[in-house]
Image (cartoon, rainbow, N blue to C red; front, side):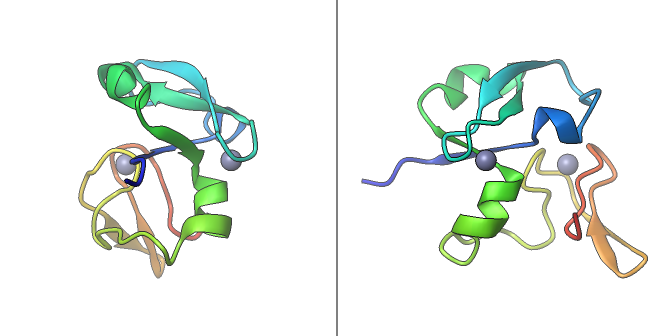
Length: 94
Ligand SMILES: [Zn+2]
Ligand SMILES: [Zn+2]
């Protein structure tokens, strides 16, 4: 059975999260990441992975809905040729 992956933004990449968040740790690189407090209970049973590790090591192995933000699930918009999340500021182009 595969552990579900909880995608999180690195703390140093996002100074102030859009939603109330607590600090967790990426299971791959050990960097501190933001965990949405509304989902922190679920996150305990999941493998926490920062977006950077996700892109580098996991992308391609896990299906991700292309038009949905991997962080908050909001619908992505195209801006300057890049998919961006209007809700949390996530960008596909990093
Ligand atoms: Zn990481
Ligand atoms: Zn988002």
